[in-house]
Image 1 (cartoon, rainbow, N blue to C red):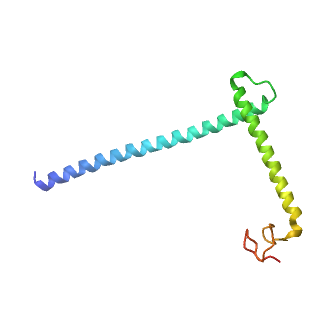
Image 2 (cartoon, rainbow, N blue to C red; image 1 turned 60 degrees about the vertical axis):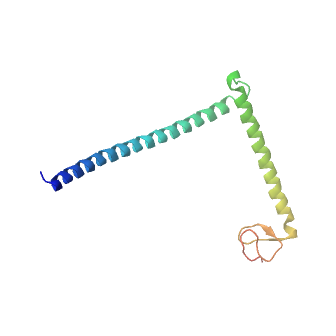
Image 3 (tube, rainbow, N blue to C red; image 1 turned 45 degrees about the vertical axis):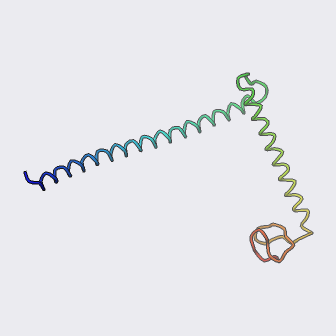
Length: 124
């Protein structure tokens, strides 16, 4: 066997080994991606179950094991309600200050300048 035939056979063997390894890596990556997708689905289902449970047992029927979590949920819900109320109050205050400035014809924000500071449109 000549030197070139030997090198050719070694190259073919290396290429086939590389192809097998590449296939194994690709299969492993597909499995890893499937595992990650399934974990996301599981997390989504856990969140849905937890939300259902919190809604169903929100009024005093809470077992001691989850009482702390339910208290945190109630505190978060109360904080969200307070923040929404303050946002609504700020928006109402903005509307009452309309006399102090002009309303932008594009975005509806109030400004007393020639151009809207929010979107840049000329104020009428």
